[in-house]
Amino acid sequence: MSTSAASVDDVIDRFAVWLGRSFSWLFIIAIVLSAYEVLMRYVFASPSTWVHATTTTICQIGFALGGAWCMVKGEHIRITFIPDQLSDSRRWFVELIALATGVFYLGGLLYAVYLDAKTSIWKFGFDGAWAPELTPGPPNWPLPSVGKAALVVGTALFLAVVVTHLIRHLAPRKA
Image (tube, rainbow, N blue to C red; front, side):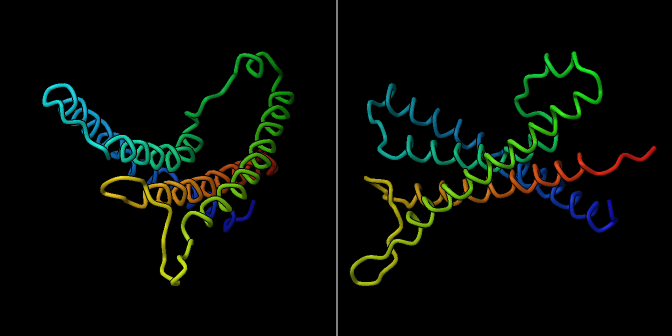
């Protein structure tokens, strides 16, 4: 593998880790908002109309941008009891199949979420004004559009990480 390819791999991995860590604090905000909703609903009998949609979108963003970080760290969900029983050459082949499947799946997912996000984000009204998909009720934020945009970014980054890991996997091993 050339030096430039190795540095690209490293940059993508480091960016995925940085992005995942940077947005992980969103889950704390979701917890605080959920606690606020429980307090308002059950103590003050005054439930909100916006906390559920906001918390759902915040978690959606966190999960979307955290997937690549989990892949880089090797902390994503894996079923390893079968590959662990195999020889090194067979384990290498199983990992190759897994990475290739990941590229295929994430490529299709990226295409689908891009089409959905494009429709959600770039809607224009009859008067030509931008009208993103909005959450009904107050405060009527463009939460669906924001969540879908984060899913596109997260899926693209996850795909980039899996492609670089596939390339790294196929590179000749140094003795």
